[in-house]
Image 1 (cartoon, rainbow, N blue to C red):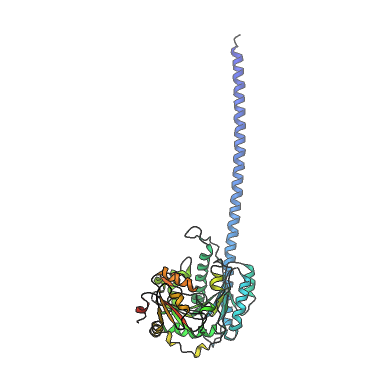
Image 2 (tube, rainbow, N blue to C red):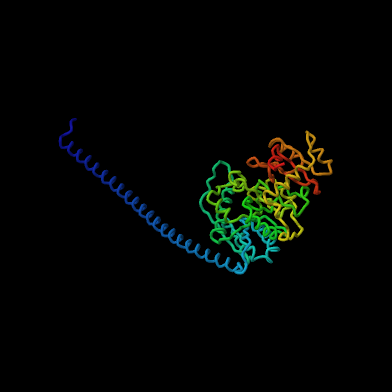
Amino acid sequence: MARSPCDLRLLLLAAAAAFIYIQERSENQCTSQLKSLIDQVSMQQEKIVALEEIKVRQDEERAHLRILIKDLEKRSVQKLLDKNVVPVAAVVIMACNRPDYLERTVESILKYQTSVASKFPLFISQDGANGAVKNKALEYKQITYMQHVDLEPVQTERPGELTAYYKIAKHYKWALDNLFIKHNFARVIILEDDMEIAPDFFDYFEAAAKLLDNDKTIMAVSSWNDNGQKQFVNDPKALYRSDFFPGLGWMLTKSTWIELSPKWPKAYWDDWVRLKEVHGHRQFIRPEICRTYNFGKHGSSLGQFFEQYLEPIKLNDVHIDWNSEDLSYLGEDKFSTKFGKEVASATPLRGSDAVLKAHNMAEDVRIQYDDQEGFEQIARQFGIFEEWKDGIPRTAYKGVVVFRYNSSQRRIFLVSPDSLRQLGV
């Protein structure tokens, strides 16, 4: 049956009313959601403003704290320095997160530093915010405490690298900039928080300071011998020039630091110093018997080589009056001539059984190696360090590595094919 026009109009009106209702409801829901979104944005903006205000306050507090720290450092340094004594060198202990190691190091140093405190003012430079280390450092009122806090994330240059080496390099630069530039010391001795020192440590460096000042062919003076294990040393007075930077308790001058600071590397600073392009034609002074002992089995190097090379190191136990010793023989020309004669006068041994022959000799001997591989083979048989850096074996001078045989006075010279020529022999 056909619908009347009236029925159709009613249906259309009902449909229109339903459509309008649905639209209004939808608009109300959208308006409600929009209002909720606006409220959320407003709340977030309020939080951002509050956080920015907190950051501003924290920045102001940090700036104020830095001023206070600088003032305290200045007062502490002024208190330590005797106006009538010109310091030989500032001594800085580089620390991070090993309070027990730090205590052992400080106690060893204070045994011999107290009597010469005005000549060798002592600093602890801590990297990071380890509370136990800071508290331990602050226990020593005679030591100036410095703290390096760097919150920037470390970006390594190669995947898998330890970030510790980057942090260490940055800390060293910060500490040495402070001591040389801010506090204006003429020389600085760098120690690490896992070292003990010998009784004549400070006398040694006082005498060596004169060498550094007068001989520009010496880049730094070290208290360390990489081949200083008990079986390879004998003479507590013997000092050598070396083309290889030893580190591990060393002194440099302000002029040298001013040269190095602008180009200081991001990581592996010690291997960087060993590059020929960095040290040029300059050498380093090292003792035969170490004036520092490294007991740090646990650290950033993960105990590398500790049992084989570091643990057997002999720490000097004989007091030498270094200021009465004539060290003029360490001048470049004199040392090269003297050392060259000693190498040339040693009995040459050749052949694949040269090391075996050396064990049965009663005098100094000379064994030639042809290249790095040949050196490593000979070094391995004797038990000395095999490592090279930038073409230089550890401890070498003009390619010559010298060590004692079984703690005796007898010496073994390992020489390159060009060593005698370089020594003018």
